Amino acid sequence: MPKCPSTKALCTGLVIFIIGGVSFAGLTSFFHYTNSTEFCTSCHSMGINFKEYKQTLHYKNASGVQAGCADCHVPQEFGPMFVSKVLAFKDVVREMTGSIDTPEKFENRRWLLANIVWDKMRATDSRECRSCHSYQNMDLTIQDKRTRKKHTRAPDKGQTCIDCHSGLVHDEPLEPDEDELVALKSSDS
Image 1 (cartoon, one colour):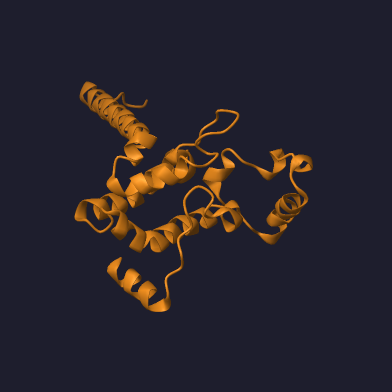
Image 2 (image 1 turned 90 degrees about the horizontal axis):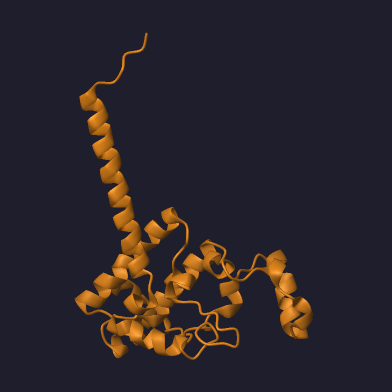
């Protein structure tokens, strides 16, 4: 006959379960708060991106649907979101240590930072874009001929959204020359 767990073991298990639940709820609330566009743009360097974003259809459009910072930059699933938040901490550190805290410093690093985002988007097949956009739901008949042709061929070519749409919401940075690129990469270590 199996032995019943002791009262002490049950209480310990219940306490661990409650602490886990409260911790998870706290972490989820923290993620929700840090996913707000207001939070994202509270850093000085993100003010530049916010001004650019406000000039796009992702911010203001005929349908009134708005994509905020997290909609494009943070995965919706908890695991990938957690990884994204941990990796984003490097940007917070850059802001706090002064490496991107002025428009000039941010612009100097923009190419490198943009490529980090673009590489992530390519690696996930533009997962965040696809939470709103999908080839299957596009009405190709109302797209101009050139766009329709590109959207029809993109999946077969293994292209993802960011391959054609970089610079859509934020100004696309100029590629630095080789010497500048080496200096940027060495200062990012």
